[in-house]
Image 1 (cartoon, rainbow, N blue to C red):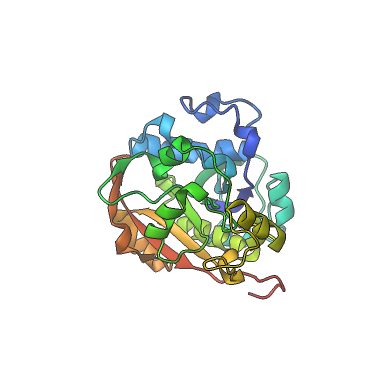
Image 2: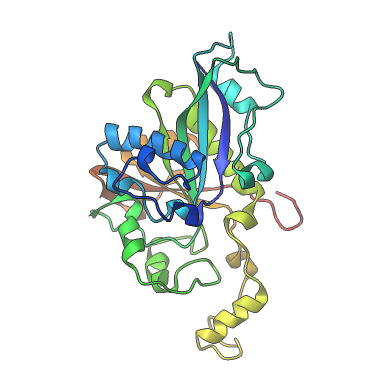
Length: 305
């Protein structure tokens, strides 16, 4: 078994408008991208079948607006001594052109599949841009990623930092960094393909892409739009206490949050995440979760990292 490549899918948006959360991925409308079917095939196997998450809770409000990554394995073929993790690392296809078209392409430097081989989706992860629902309260019990808070909250304009204005108090009290962040989540690897380094490959691929494309992950808001927001919030000409902008607070500066299953804390720690004890612990679909943060270096407007 050797993993051939990782591919990505930009936010599918309205292509998932007809997705029926009560049905498995094989029974979904044809308009759903093929890569998203692969995403859900892995998540259904891991979260629904293995961890007993209800099928209707697995697809949720953040999926249409998230970036998704999938890693594949070649089945029915052998590539000699090539290891799964080495092959996957050599065949990342995360260029912006490939992402926008949703195509998958094998690296010319990587091993070629014989005609009889097929590809199997074996792992997935996603990145969710702001805005986010409030962090789960310590000791609370809820569905996946506090998504019901997002679904039940009334629609409200986004602030210049990408937060829902109605959620600003919750974010200020639970986010010690008080700045925009992205959320890493729904990391899943099929059981036969675990302990091959594929989870780290997915996380690295996703965060490396985000670091190189910060404006795609969290689009920067212009000074004109910020001023319009100030006016709409009743600040007049923008002069006054609490309304002096610092551009460092307006742009995403590489802050990443993960709602980790508690027993995986050590694994995420190896990947550079640190637990935030102020977020406490909560029950998500019957599984204990904790919050962990990591900051990555992102490319600035001049192209420097």
